[in-house]
Structure formats: C-alpha cells, structure tokens
Length: 318
Image 1 (spheres, rainbow, N blue to C red):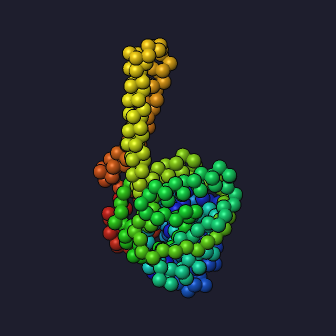
Image 2: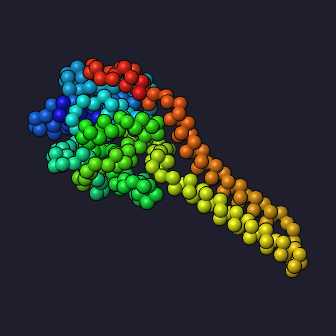
Image 3: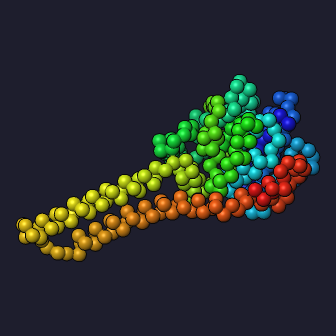
C-alpha cells in the first residue's frame, strides 16, 4: 500500500460523497495503491450508511465505526493505527482542506522529508473571533512549549510510515497529534494554501471542544502553567507580607489604623482567587496523569471492514 488517507467523520453526510469523488479525482491519476480510511466517530446522521455504500462499490474504501463519540484526535489515532500505507494523509471531511493539495504534499514527502504539513495562508468562512483565538493560541503555544509546533496549521498533513510507527508508541489519553508529530522530529516542511469555507453541514468543533484541545496541547507539551502558578504564589506571598508589615507599622508607629472589613475581605478574596487558580492548574495536570494511569482503551471499535491481521485484537480496544 503506497498511500492511506485517514478521514475522521462526525455528522458529515453532506460532504462524504463529494469528498470521495474529489479524492478519487486527485489520487487515481497518481497511479498509487491507496486506501480511503473513514473513521466514524459516533455520527448521529447517515454518515456511516453512506460510507458503507461506498465500501460496497469500492474496495479501497475502508471504515472504522466507533461504539460512541471519542473525539476528533482519537478518531485520527485509530485511523493511523489501522492504516497500511507507506505514507498517510490526515484530512477532515468538511472540504475546507482541499484534497487537491495531496499531490504537492506527496511530492514534497519524497524529497527527503518525513512530515509535510499544510500551512494556512488565509481562512475563509470563519468568524473574526475564531480566527483571533486560533492565532493567539498557536502563538502562545509556540512561546511556552519546549518544542517547535508550527503556527497556522491543523492536522491536514502527510506523514511517513516511520512517523506513524513512532506515534503508536505514544498512547497518552489526551491526544494533541500535531504536537506529538512535532515532538517526534525528523525532517519536516510545509506547503501553503488558502483554506476554503466549509462545504456543507455544521462544524463539530465547538468553542468548548477547541478549549479542551488547547488545554490538551498546553498540558501535554508545557509546564509553563505550573511555573506561573508557583511564581504567582511567591508574588502573592510577598504582597501579603508587605501588607502585614504596613499594618503593623500603621498600628504601632503612626497610629493611623482604622480596622475595617473592606481591606480584610479584599485580601481574602485576592488570596483565595490565586489559590483556586493554582489548584485548578495543578488539577488539570493530575487529571491527565490519572487518565493515563487507568490505561483505559483510547477507543472501542463497533464495526470495521478492515481484515488485516496486524495486532488487531489489541487495536480494537486501543
């Protein structure tokens, strides 16, 4: 198998057929042995039925159906686990990332690179708030992490089998695949493109999911929040000590001391707020450690038409 295309699916019935058609139009002229691997992440519409219809007509269409919704990053992980290609493309089904870019990505990969990611020049059809928060997140992440995660990129990329095998050695529960790929290293480059509007349907990436993904990225690759909590603790302790000295001075030296609730309550609320923020940050890290210690499977496969006898018995409950 020369190429695998991994496509996470969540309520994409409006786009699946168009995506399949465009993928075939792009890859067929490349004369490659390939597979289209759809991962149905608990869709509530007709996505799975459409994929199964395509699989009946085209043996190159493979599908994985989860027992429930496990999340976008886990769906991509399952596709990578069961892919067979020497190179693997990760692409979403909403057609914002053009399948036509697979050709230059594949060509670039064979120029001595192990990872070629698609870098966005522009993002059409997205609100100003989403563009701003995405831009801010990528730049903050680049500043506080100890690895170089490229800005203005998503999961749309092509990776070699060597990188796929390395990703299989990283089974943490809170997945941030683009960060993991950057951490792995090897020679990496990019191809620029203009991101189009969503072809149909509604995005499954709500603001709450984006915040969760951002937290996964930050906690997986940076301890800056923990350091910030520690520094804040020292700063607040210093301020509290200074206030204590001033209070004693005012009480016993100048005599200009007027006891009152406002200053007391302000101090208590300020200190309490800082403590709660620090506890919350520490809790985020502990919850992720706890999830990994439990070693629950990343996903459970309800149905698939993949018959390869790899470590499939364990992968089904990976």
